Image (tube, rainbow over all chains, first blue to last red; front, side, top):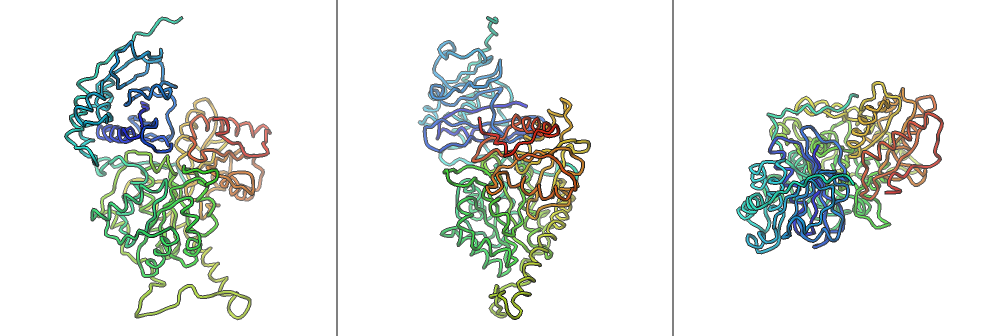
Length: 190
Length: 411
């Protein structure tokens, strides 16, 4: 079982991203369950969505408290909530940010980091800071858990209300191409 | 009853990923109702939005009535059902409360309406999140009530609901209870059956053979009945007794319909009560709804550590599956019952309260405790169930608690 927690803000599409990712994983022959967290829906408020994937059927329909991977599709939500809570030691962070690795000030539990300046790219593609599909591309690049082709297939199977399929396919590809992956050596025990 | 097995015919089914609300809507379309009537309410809203879209897209050939409130929603369907139509709606919480007058009338009139309750906790303190309080509050009104564990089971059970409701030995309205939040918005891999296969399963539509309203053949429906004179008392007893008989018949019909569904579609579920790892179990957890998945994972973990624990999951809650439940609990030495709602009068959970009635039939004392958790959207995790297992084990050594254990009290 591989557990992912997505962090974003209301309106950015974190919940939709978890659905697309689940669809891509199922297209790849895996089982997947996506559960949004439930809060008062308002634009800009911190949002969390959970996703589990496995080779066998997933029975538990629960929130995720000890994720293997964090996907953070907003550059500043890290200032509002502790996105690192419960992250497994050596876990993965996929972060949208214009910052460099040292500037991110990551806790010791993080073992792998994929950084993508998704807000900048989104402004070029959508003229709006919609980062969800970009960060799915960044996730595929950072973890290899799902092949980009299956995410593209999932996008083609989705319905888009206010942004075109072609733009999102471009976003997925650019998220994949323009992510820099860092492996952090485990620091010596104090 | 054996544990549910998912014998998937992977090559024959097409898989999609969808939330429980969408799975219910897809099932409704496959069952081909003639009329649906809707009023949106959280966490049911996306279900009726999906139904409305299926109608708009031409994938569901039904009349849809966007009524001004839930009282009208169910009243509209009563008319449609009396005219011989297959009918569907969905609601929850305050919507169900507003619907109560026609809700009470539907089973007495023997109208096979299918209604999803996307379960929601009781309001005050204000809450828009999941919990079984709404469905449990109306458990004594005469509707069949069936709870689902997974998104796939929502789809499969919703199709079966129409066949159960319309069976001539039942002729009662059916609630499919879908846990608000965790099942309604939880997305998972779902196999969607082919329309032709569902058509063959459903058979020839014959919905209201006993009282189909027809201008050419006028009849009075639901006449003033009862009182203390003339034929009143005996006629009223006849109505009530046949309603109770319909409920008892439903136990058999629910089982038969599940068996036929498994034969045709390759997915089988325990229709009334599922036993999970109960073969040599010394203690039993009882669960209902989507909490069961985490409970199964917890039982696997506890089994590895040597605990002889199993699960008895109630799928059909109304009519209460007394006989199969008594058989399932026959050998256990302690029982922990987990509820997602409150029975205020008894200071415990409703499933626990009803289980006490079943335990009386066992003819021996079995120590038991009521656990209440997952209220108003709270999570019921594997760790919560490991605690339930520990505390149920302790019951065998005489540790009895006087009130319920509130699982999320310190979360």
